[in-house]
Image 1 (tube, helix red, strand yellow):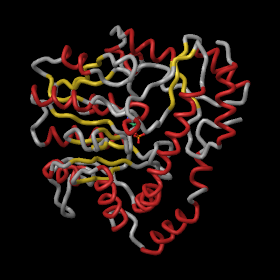
Image 2 (cartoon, helix red, strand yellow; image 1 turned 60 degrees about the vertical axis):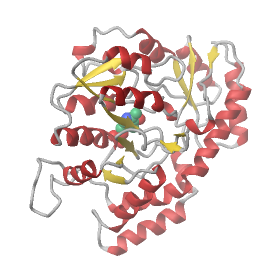
Image 3 (cartoon, helix red, strand yellow; image 1 turned 120 degrees about the vertical axis):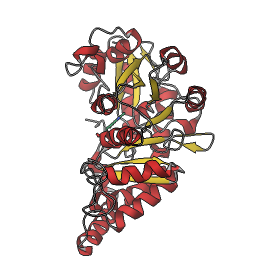
Image 4 (tube, protein in one colour; image 1 turned 90 degrees about the vertical axis):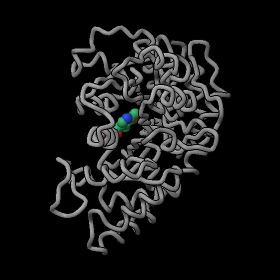
Length: 367
Ligand SMILES: *Cc1c(COP(=O)(O)O)cnc(C)c1O
């Protein structure tokens, strides 16, 4: 079986470096909020081009704490509206509702899968305070257009960059477009820890300071609490793992792009719609997502041919039981996407022969 993502294989290639970093932390005797975290934060901020990086426990907290910090800073108020693409992963929505804010779900662009500037403009109301674009599947959202809208209407922009590590446009990376960005380093992301981890990047000093307190019981100074914060820290072991993995991120992204290019050039099946990229640097191919009207049938055929695939995501957030208040909303483009998408194996450790076999199986399938 060609695996969808062979994490064991990816990490095995870096085994010696990871073990060495692990030993360094074990021997240091310091396991939370120490020199590994500080070094990773500096290195990741530099990678993204932002002034600050604040490590937290996971990607959901990265998004949620940023909104919370804006509330603490009185830039956003309870009940304010946040515009978000309807076809995102549930975490984007949870971050909004967890903070007592109102998600305004809008249809994505049907080809890029990303937040459509036109939908944003038509969803604006007096209560709109922020836009939450998602760099879905690794493709940078239409940031120049979205930033222009935000500027015109005095809105904050929080990027959900959990799938977009390293994607860039005009020399500017994901995480350095909006007022802040939330990253996830969940093991399967393009930059993945060996457990849970996340971070916020921003060039806003005041926001960075507030986040540093919020992630640590609301405190900058031990036993002095400015906010009712939480415990959401990125520990030393994970920071050390991420420092190793960050060194290899660009070469792994280049490998993902090589695989994507082969899929795009060589998959030829009238029943399948391929994803697009406009400029190479815009897309880091976290996922390679094809569309097919007979998606479930196609998935079964590929499974029989020894190709593992996944569905990102089978149910749209507004159709989830967790959000009965949104179940009645009709979003045909979004719902169609959830019915048709299928993610092919996308893993920097795939061999050219494995890529051959995926292409062959997809071309032979007749859904
Ligand atoms: C993975 C992911 C998250 C959440 O990250 P966790 O680290 O799992 O909390 C948020 N948004 C998107 C788009 C994601 O893919």
